[in-house]
Length: 331
Image 1 (cartoon, rainbow, N blue to C red):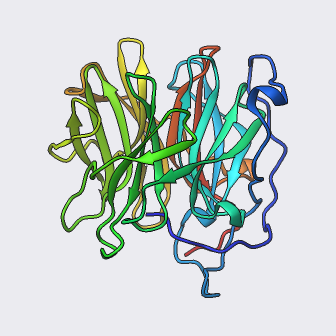
Image 2 (image 1 turned 45 degrees about the vertical axis):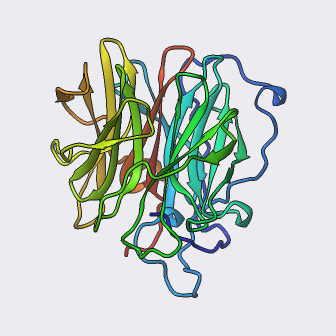
C-alpha cells in the first residue's frame, strides 16, 4: 500500500521529451481543461520523521510513456508524465479522451491521493484532482487505483484501503462509482480481502461476461477472483504464470491482453511482460519482454514496472509505466 511522504525540492531534472510517432491533432486548452495542480520534479528521499525513506516507494517513482503499433513492441517516448507518482491505470473514452489515474505524493495538496492526467494526444496533459466520499470507516487515503467503465457507462474505481481499526496486514480492495470519473462515491462492502494476507494494487477486466480481478500481496503470485457484476467476487486459485505480477489488461483483436511485470526480490529490478487469453480460462505468456530498463536515457533506473496500456484513437497503444528516478539512494 502506498505510504505517506513529505515533499522536498526537486533533486533530478527531466530531459526534454521525444515526441511519439504519428499522433492526432494537438488539443486546445478547452478540450482537456486547465491543470488543477502541477506535479513536482524529482524524488523525495526524506520520510515525515526526517529519516531517510525506506525502500522504493512512490516518493522515488516516475511515470513514463511508451508507444506501440501492435501492443507488443513498445518504444519509450522519453516523456515523463509525473514524478513521485506510482501505480498508473490508463483508459481511453469513446470520444477519444485519454485518462491516466495514479497515486501521487507531491505537491502537498494532493499528497498520497488519486489524481488523473487527461489528454487528447498523449503529449499535452492536464492534471486533475479526484474526490472520493464515504471513507469514514476506512483509513484516510485510498491508493492503487484501477478504473473500469461499467456496462451502463459509469466509472468504477477499485482501490486499496483498510478499516480504521485494522493493522497493517489488513489492506484489501474496495470500489467507488462515478458519473464523470472525477467525483466518486464509495460502494458498500469490500470487493476482495484475504485473511492474514496483504491485498495490494487491484486490477480488473471484463473478459466476455465475467469480471476478472487480480491483486498483489504474495511475491510471484496474484490473488484472483471472478464476478458476474463487478461487485461480488468469488475467490479463485491464485494466478501464477512465470512470476508475472498482473498490472492492467484490455480487449484486443481475438481476445484480451494483460500486461504485468516480473520483479527480482533481491534488488527490486523489474521488466514488463504480457499474457493473452481468448476466454479468461486459458492463458498464454507472450514471447519476450514488452519493455526493459533503458538507463541510457537518463530518465529511469533499477527497473520498469506497473504497466498500464490503452488503445489510442489512432490505433496505437500507449503504455504508462513506473520506474525509479535516477539518483535516488539505493535502499
